[in-house]
Length: 311
Image (cartoon, rainbow, N blue to C red; front, side, top):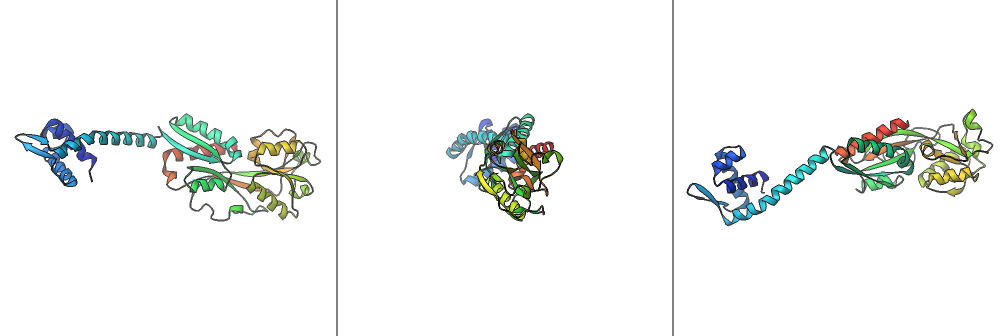
């Protein structure tokens, strides 16, 4: 194996014509130069230098190696500088995947702060709901996934839909706990409950429903069935503004995360607290090796700070 330090010595000998002059240029002794040249010749399996009087001249193999050494060493220097820039957060790239309500609330604040602190770090953003976002992380298609999981119906602690251990192979950065709220039309008979107290989900048993993303839809059915009824879902959409618009038009009721409502102006609709509380845990996920990358670590820190502002 050819080592970079040996190539540097060879170039110095070729430029100066002697071991002693090369040693002076490199700041080492003549015996050290001689030892490294012997090691290089041993690595390549052929002589590289021939002594001619008091000077050294290159063999044909030596000339070839010196000719390539310039490109090798300059490329290595460029690589070292690029890695140092990434390690020092003067450069770097982070691929972030987030669910929509996280993209509109947590992500903008976090990325603005990251850019202000480390302008050389670039972040790309794609949207995907869990579990797809977590699959993208495991498949190597992103570096950080914003994800969530619900508590079990009835408010008992636990991982809910995903089950215990669903993220055991990942680094989990808890961000915040997001409470679900009911959303009803402003003129609905239960709209005034928002000013006077909480609403039980069973109070909405006979209403038409607007459901959200597949995971949220499954959670809605689970919570309603635990209250003794199956919701009649008239509309289903992954788009939170569409859910709010449908409720505002009087076409049904919905249950949305508080974070989603904060990102949309609920015109014609009113949010009402649900009791017993139903919550989802919002986290940032990454792989153990990626967690050590400075740009990824800095992005995780900024997401946590943004979540603290929301909480």
